[in-house]
Image (cartoon, rainbow, N blue to C red):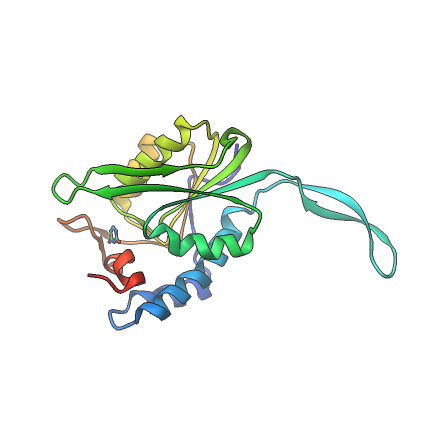
Length: 212
Ligand code: URA
């Protein structure tokens, strides 16, 4: 189990500056993706800050030392499609040995409820730190459903990484999964009637891939 608090709001100036650039309507898709990749490194740093270390005897050119190394805790990254892939790429650069899973959920535009269309997860999830990634924690319905799937597959140490969170989504996750810490770059004002985060940045998938 993790020692992280339920909500970590990463207020680092680099994160905040890059996020503001992403929010701008006229930021093109290529810059949007690049900024998301850069922010994901900084968010990944926060969400992994409690990973346990051991010391291992190593030789430096000058003398032997007991050097801190990750305790061999296995990691899995799970992207909630499709916008999750934008965060996944950057986190995977930082943790290249992590296993990767994908959960496909789309939001029914009328009920705002998640509908599952794909699920492919790494094995032995019960033995891994599992980081679910989705840039937008909006209603929290898809996020809570994705975490349900991870728990059904045996995951015990689950963390949720997002770029923007709405208070409604945070509350929904806290109610459904109080054991899952959330790391986010911002907590925005509210959701609009269509379930979009306000002020937000629009549809993260569309902004990333240049679709409408
Ligand atoms: N998904 C998005 O991409 N944007 C929002 O504002 C809410 C959900």
